[in-house]
Image (cartoon, rainbow, N blue to C red):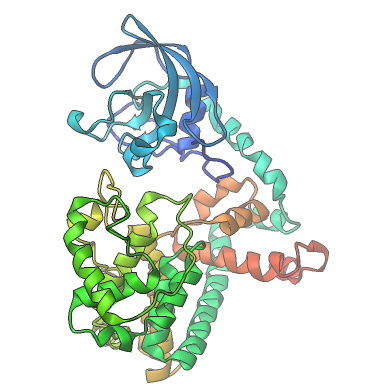
Length: 471
């Protein structure tokens, strides 16, 4: 499916890596433009050696389904008609779940920047075209055009009155501004956690916030509700890990019925035991509403819940004690972040499954690096700061260590608010690539956007930030 309204102007490839064996990180949107503009060299060959001539690249599809429809391609001497799908890597075919989606049954060519799968793992029977060595030199002229390609979104979120002032600031001073805003945002996260822990207790509050962070925007509420009801005391009262796992999935309503649903045979022994433990518990499901459509298979509710269960096992159902131990032993930010980011990967069965009924190919850890960093950024570091302030005082060495860790985290995942903020403040929006080098840069941008633009309904005439930033 064609990706819309992103901020993905391509990273600017250097001359030495274009056409070489080094990876160049184009956005998927840019690769679609390359295909649409026919900016590929002649004498193309698919990964299996088949000669390819493009009679027609097809019509660009902006709805669900393959990126280009009704293409006409000549494979050796065989004329074929069908759809074309475009990805950065050939493994993205499986990562996006296309192998089990009937909408992609008519795809005849998979166009990728880099083929990262061995021949036996390639999605068949379609052909694969790797284009990293086949760009025409005229791709460089597209860079300015690509900026224009995203201006329909920019017109929806036009630059604010302060954009000119931001444009006059050099990158260093702008990053200093974002650092100040980010530390304010960090203090707000710490205070919100302090209020949460005052209501529920430190460990329960940390558990609830962590589970809410597992759910992204769509499933934040059901994950939080689950943690409120499946208390640490309740779960720790069961002696076996398998019992605790069954209680979590049973309360969540995510235990499938083996008598009615088609399941992966590898899961049947686990589910047989889980249902026995669930029935024995006498508990009732929470009737939570899970959003399971439209998300990536790797982010399924079942995988996220399994990740949460493994984290609870790791922290032995007392995350407060676990966090305090880390804080007392950490000697530097590298050690602190290494401990906080050390999430259980998951066993091979779960790493290679979307849920109890669908496999994933290729497999992946239950929590990706980006989601792990987001959990540290938004949950664990604010909780650690709250603990340090309570135990050691406002100016404790531990608090300084935590703030430094906050400033060292790499960039996190973006969202619609982040993209809006980039278009509101930065002209052109692609300047974000030059400025937002760390997670705290992103956090500072979001703090300013939420506390000024959104709080004032984009009323630039009465915005105090304009006068503050100019002084």
